Length: 277
Image: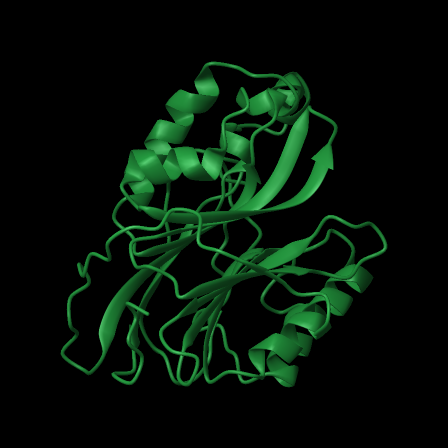
């Protein structure tokens, strides 16, 4: 794929081996996917109107809310974030992925800026990790309206890696199909893959059928509603895995710190994958 942009890990440091060995085989890894809506707490549909100014202007509550998010995510090994700000006027020019890394103790972080609106907003997707990634690559996803991407995070050797893909797909169905077609090509190059994010479509949608039919990925549990956070009725946030990864648990967490609820998964990876990279 000619349009890949290789990027270095932003916060290097010593690897901490904190994940325990499972009774089965391999390393046990705790995953979390969370659309954090740039740190904005939304508890009613009317807040999209009354709180709309928070999407372009700084406010003190953003960081108290982010501190609560940091306490939540500190228990996980790999966290995929959507709707983060890479440092613009609305965030007080603070990179929110870096902020959450420092507050949560997940020392390895990287973010991909997908869309900028002048100095007002800088929309990004982020990864936080307790384990040092071996490589991170930014992919730009196709779409009539640019501004969507997928973060490719590799753990372990190039010969037998674990790949984590973090994304936030488009609102339109046709664009989502194009984007998942692109992502399917990446997935099919590897044996051990985790795909997580706000996919803006349900488990039983034609888009998810398209992805599953094109790859060997599966969603262990269907119908886990994450949106809206105050009355979840739609399952548009997902974590999918390839068959080589043993899934122990999948759960939606009742933490209404955004307009989405976070979804967690605990997996066991094969012994052949050396996560420290």
